[in-house]
Length: 319
Image (cartoon, rainbow, N blue to C red):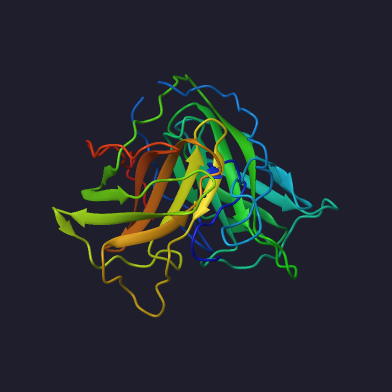
């Protein structure tokens, strides 16, 4: 995947790459859950004009992704469209080509053939999963969603064929059980997770690239030895509130041959596909464990005042 903004279409604006798994690419990403009830509905508004197609920043593609189940001759076939909230289930899916055949060859990007994101429609729960692929092309991963309601599944991948474009395909997933709508957490430039503080500087701009910087600290001191995770020092996924347009963003600069990062800042270049509210999920690794910090940001408006840190992992699930 390229540096800079990585955007794929799996339904995010989170149209901005993305745990308990096993085998090749073990790991289930941290779960993020915050406060409760504003955007709890299941309705998906139409995407703004010009926001069809997927791909990552730096390519001649739209910055919004994940809004379609089929694109470029490929289709996401979600074999597990419903699970039960609070119970672990085996999430299974297949990517099919234009002839209906299961895809069994992919380009590896950031250490994986495919990245899978699951996010609730209210953007309160988030998971970055690493499924394993069987020889017949069927992907699977354990998933345990904490609350009932609507979720969106995003598959970010590049087929192995020559000159293939990166795609993010999206499909709806339902978690059954008693449902209560939760509101989008308020805008904030700070978050706390597992004893770490993370500060966001920079502003999302609709239709224009801008730099976002995230600084990690612990006990009030900058963390200067972040470790690479999936080939990068940080992964940022942005989802747009409402339709969950997907933006998979990667940091500016790569780890190279080093094992630790000399400074606390992780820099990203991002372009919001439209004005509106976005939920940002940052994965970073320190002391051998992956943590996820979450922020709510607005594109097309002034940056909020720093307030009480509000983004955190809720279940303690880690890699």
